[in-house]
Amino acid sequence: MSIEIHLADTQGFCAGVSMAIKTVDEALKKFGAPLYVRHEIVHNTSVIRDFESRGVVFVEHLDSVPAGSTVIFSAHGVAPSVYDDAKQYNLVPVDATCPLVTKVHREAIQFSEKDIQTILIGHRGHQELIGTSGYVKPELLHIVETVEDVDALDLNTSQPIGYLTQTTLSVSETKVIIERIKAKFPDVIAPPKEDICYATTNRQDAVIRLAKNCDVVIICGSPNSSNSNRLRETAENENVPSYIIDNHSEFRPEMIQNKQRIGISSGASVPSYVVEEVVSKIQETCPDSTVFREESREKGFMFRLPKF
Image (cartoon, rainbow, N blue to C red; front, side, top):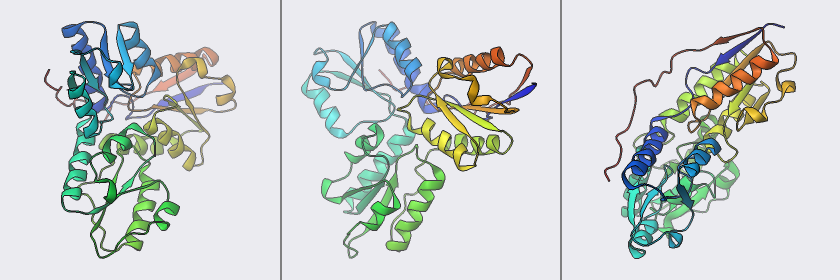
């Protein structure tokens, strides 16, 4: 059967991920291996395995890094205490935090300086949320994941209340949570600009467009990637069967059985070659297929590398 393979018009590396990955590349050239990175630089298995093969060592705790070493902080950002740890262990930090995450850190600091009770919307245990939490005074911090969490909040309404969000959340689900917060706390202070980043929004919008034209949507992304999982959920919310796969080896022909239009997208930390390998795998299953692709809407957008 002749099938169509449609690639999302915005997918793959965002500017923050590109900056972080290039930071590690340039640091390898300058300092050589082993090169230490705290946490996975981005949440993608292919990227991590490639760097590990080149001598990058990913650690969760800085006490395992030799004194005097350079250590790169991941794109997800870290709490202030991690910088203190780097100083304690005589390490040289290189900050590869996405600038849009850093923006949320600044907002968190400003809220705490004004003693604003801060509702932080995000996924507990995610590295970005952990990092951002560190910029809020503990007594002011209230983490919510769902509208039920909002309903359970017991805040002092005589003291200012504000909210911030993780940058990689579902736009539609976060909107519902924010609406519930505003209903419960009418005077709540919003961030100066929306915290969910442009790349997350663009990719979710692209998947919605894809889902309206396709019978099934396949998202390339690793299991621990928040933004990739949100893309699969976005397609599912459009009532289209959707799957998330780490690479071409996880593709199964039954995913596209009796489907004529196949949509493919990828998370913000997924290399383009992963998508191309998935396309090739599908073409092996369905030789009579046509691939449709458009130029990315984010072409040419980039962030400067940190100095080191």
